[in-house]
Amino acid sequence: MKLTAPDKYSNAVVEVPTSKSIANRLLIIQALAGSGLISDLSEAKDTQILKELTRSLPPVLDVGHAGTTFRFLTSFLALQQGTFVLTGSTRMRERPISVLVDALKELGANITYIDKKGFPPLKIIGAELLGREINVKANISSQFITALMLIGPYLESGLTIKLEGKMVSFPYISMTASLMESCGLPISIHGNQIMVPEGKYNFRSIKVEKDWSAIAFWYEYVAVGKIPHILIKEVSKHSIQGDSKVREVFEKLGVESSFDHLGLHLSFNEGKVATKRLNFDLIQTPDLAQPLVVACVAQGHQAIITGLSTLKNKETDRGKALKVELAKLGIDIKVGEDFIELPGGDVKVKPTIRINTYEDHRMAMAFAPLVLMTKILEIDHPDVVEKSYPHFWKQLSGTGIWHKY
Image 1 (cartoon, rainbow, N blue to C red):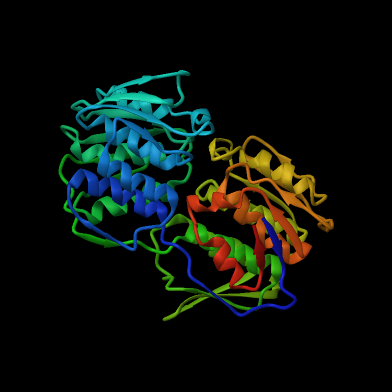
Image 2 (cartoon, helix red, strand yellow; image 1 turned 30 degrees about the vertical axis):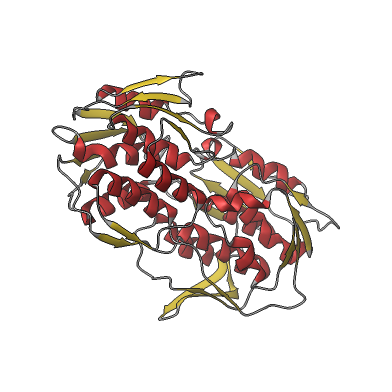
């Protein structure tokens, strides 16, 4: 797909999708409760796949690229009557699942690996699971912990999870606890211990918030293009999503936030752009890495971004992917085990730059705003955005950026 930048800025009004992170948790809660209304359910492909599979429960469940869906279903299916094969795309079969499987086996789950040990696909035979205290590595993925928390109430005696190591993406665990509590299950989190009581969800009706992970790309858009104003409709200042921290992160790049009855207003203030070497710790919000890295590169910042140990286990190895694609712009970043270092300097604008998206929705959306600098930009496999933000290209065209498949 070819993107072309407008000659002048268009005063844009954007409507982002609702949170798939919240929606996916609510779908598991709804399925376990057997009732409940979810309003403004995300249109993201991941969420729609989970919705369909939890309702139909076919013997073979193929989640495609949907990592969250795979992890949540692993726990959910362990409780269901029947025999299931849980599988996904080629990339999904490369994403480790042993931490979650081992924990479920401790609780009595009947799960076996069909191909490579420690990786999808899985054969799951539903069983009655018994609650107990288990130890889970906290530095791999918060989704493993959430998957266990969500089914915890339906285990005899409930579930106690002791977290080992430094916790990553804790706001997602906090989000899970908040949603469970809103459905009648009080969750206790003290230090490295999570206690889930035995019980049943009392799920009536919940409205899903707008997705702050999606909003992050509009912060990037404003930072890259130095856009004077953009309105994101129906966004509240108060959120249970950790990625709402994007407001603080992008302040250093000159993006100011304000709220009113219409939603979130973003504006660029050149005087607020930091002039010193930047430091960011994204251990709690790693999904902000791609828009932040690209925005910093666009503004020419020297920066070090830490807390990125989980990037290699995402839809692609995001650190390596960023390094390869930014090299096309003349920027050689350094990628370590849990950090990315940016050298600073000007982006080299070339007549045609083609960005590979690696079947990763966030790669497509993170690089798209660079068209404001390059004027023309090609994006391979643009349909990957359907995973989380199906209308992204339509929304982008509302700012004046023209696209042609």
